Amino acid sequence: MINRTIIRIKVLQIVYSCYQKNCKDFALAENELLFGIQKAYDLYHYLLLLIVLLTDTEQKRLDIQKNKHLPTEAERNPNMRLADNRLAEQLNRNVQLQKFAREKGTLWNNEDTRFTRSLLNKILQSDIYKAYLESEDMFESDRDFWMEIFKNLILADDELSEVLEDQSVYWNDDLDIIGAFAIKTIRQFTAKTPADQALYPMFRDAEDKDFAIRLLHRSLMEEEENSRRIKNQINNWDIERLATIDLYIIQIALAELRNFPLIPISVTLNEYIDLARYYSTPKSPVFINGILDAIVKELKNEKLLFKE
Image (tube, rainbow, N blue to C red; front, side, top):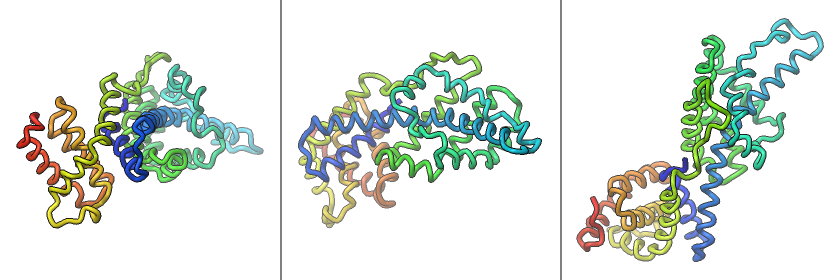
């Protein structure tokens, strides 16, 4: 599940932190990288567990209404579609997800937290919920409801961003990508999905974990040489005046270009230009693309880069 885009983001975060602290301890940097990747994988589970928590909160809300003094007819006989959502029930029974919940909790352990009640209220007031109540009462409607809620409400919720930022400084950077994997997971569920259905693994394979560690090591080890190459390509610019994050993005991109012969040049360039769009200034993608393109030509002329 932790794809190479997430790995590149995590390496950038750790490299940035190391350079700011003048860190020379590669073992410590590697541990921080793997910890950051594990935290991103934790977020994947927490987002799926949020579905279970919200439906449980809805059930408790309905119970309170039923049991209050002189409930209305609507309160005595509420619509149970969300409380009885079949996708939420499947997630509640999922062996892997419940094992995670037992070991690490749900992140929002207090069922009466302001955040979960506020988010539930936004869901109940949404047009997505209104359309859900009018849809056919079947598993596919239950599943598709949560996919729409994630895409259009949960992942865009400012309160969720604040909660995640309080828990981990990196989670807001992870939210869009990890949220996309949560949606892909939801899409894979059917009415017959068993409780032992496997969720996405942390790494697709051992090669991806090796990619993460090697990219971090080479980025740190080659910092001096790559910085020199960048300076040589920057005409009439004071390197100290450039956006610091741009320099780190270029350095990591150069480490990838030189040390991973099976990754095409265009793939590496596109990935790091996309990182610049997210992390840096509006002008950074063009600047980074120009510098990387010039250094690629330089490396080829020096017979240090042979791939296309």
